Image 1 (spheres, rainbow, N blue to C red):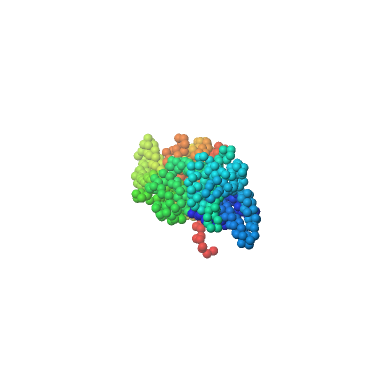
Image 2 (image 1 turned 90 degrees about the vertical axis):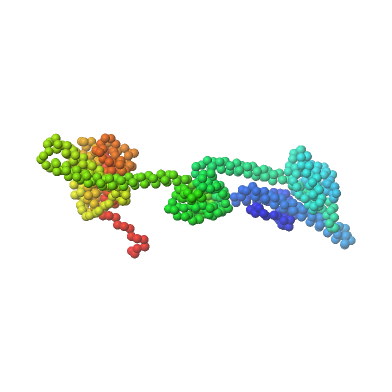
Length: 600
């Protein structure tokens, strides 16, 4: 069934026919039917579904069945002749057991048999199986010719078959036979010449097999083939409408079965079915996202077929025949049968070339903007320093009138705010371009930093109430005092800006063994839940009008400084307690992990 070139020779058929004899040594139709049913059931259990293979199997069984009958009849006739000749040589009567055995076989054989004369096609004898097959009594078949059993629509080809049967040792053909009630059934007919010891033809025997079941199987095969072809056409139509390239290959050979229109567009050449995956790989230049050539085993389809690996959105590159490069996202997966065996593989490819170009352009634009901010911010510090020095000199002199002093004071406050903005911009660009805000740790007491920051906030916000609570414990460690002062100042300023005037801002410092914890709490409306995940994004300013001219970088810089110390910052905001920022800082920087394989 798996070898389309296999043929059943006459010798092999005669040997195989011994396997399906009845209990009395006769080849029976029942045993042949059992043989077909058993083999086909085993074939289906092993996953066999190819209608063409089933058809080859039926052809082989038909050959064995015909050979079995012919061999049996010829053997019995030969045995009868030998018995008669032996009796004559001994001067006795022929053994009557031979003819009786022949008659018994002829009567009980499950295959229809008719014996005809040497020159006439009229039946000399017909067995009960042939009579039952055609719905007639045995006696009514004697004297009939083979064409009398054939339906009118099949009689036109009968003379040609009978001529072939007369000129050859045997001839086989199929025809539509007629029952007595007028119904039809397809039959397989084997006509064999009967010869005596000298080789002279003394008659002909025709065996008739009802192949209705075989024809039904063939019709079912054709129906299944048409269904499969229609499903395949529908699948191809659907796949051709997909914007993603789709490639399907069978396992384990990797023979490519299908590639849609989008795949051809992505790869820049028509889809060519091939016998193995290696043939297809050799015709395409595939690379990783890092521009490394893909080996045969690294192809998404190869991994899906050989190891059952599933991948999602794997970055790939392909070099087209015209020299252009396409950036792709490849997803691959195996297709398994009911027994969890890999029977095929599917790869989908999505073209992200334009998106990749847009991302590169956006990244370059962002880097250019960050560099520009850094340059401009740095260059603004010199004229700003000159302004601040001049304002300070004017404020400390006695030449200003009260009205002018107020104006100069406003200039001083504005220049201080501008200095803070420039400092924040420089910190932002350092963190984005340099991998984070640089931290320089020195031993110190964090309580001093927090107290200094709170005192500065009290001076800048005299109308507000600020409290500092320091719990018992130790607060020494290794810190960047200037950066921590910036953290406390930004968190406190944020709390003052976004809380009611009559609401106090509370600072709490506590010892947590290897860490110290700072909490800054203010009252007022809670932060909306949808804003909490983006609270530390750069250039994000709070809702409402209380922005005080900031750039929205304060909390971003706080987070970067805390991370630079190896710590973490968390925020919770509820109506019952207000908003609380919690900063946890390790006393010492984390030690690098020992190298793999180092001595213990």
